[in-house]
Length: 212
Image 1 (cartoon, rainbow, N blue to C red):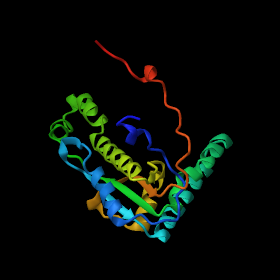
Image 2: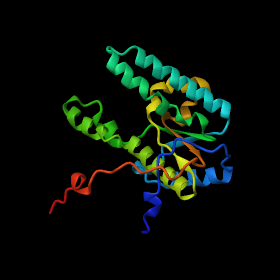
Image 3: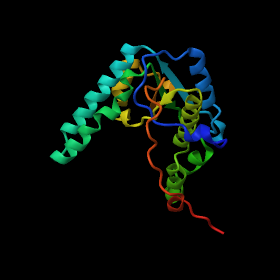
Image 4: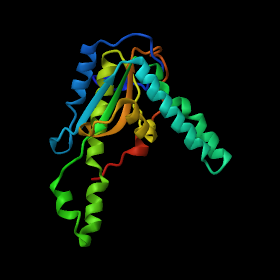
């Protein structure tokens, strides 16, 4: 046992008990998300918390319909089959008691303003924007959310695949542009089974380089 166990016990949970998550727990989990680092401390995130089962099922339906639509326009049977077989993973949130929608607001930085219209500095501008600091900010916030939830005994799953249906999700819940752009879905609930095995990680020697 180490003091990093709160990290190692996090798993992607896709089956949940039919059990409510108290509002105070949800607020504590989202509070943890807001303590993540953010680019230039802009805190350009927003969180929708959905506990209405019918609404969650509606979102799952539009995601599923779009997924099938994409599969059906594949150029060959292999791609169609590969796309279709992942459908269940894109809609696993449909039976979760809670679904959190994570948004990113526009990221403002003086570098963008200075460089964006100067053709001679296009390459430099591309380097600046390619790091996608606003997206990195959301990733940090979601990770805090996942770890906090796991530490409190809840299961979660970080889902970005359903973003192929962002427009349809907006139709279900409405789109308030002030919240930003939808970036991820995170179902939360009491896990049906916490004993599922952890997927293997790559050996550290394959992903770490020490430079003296």
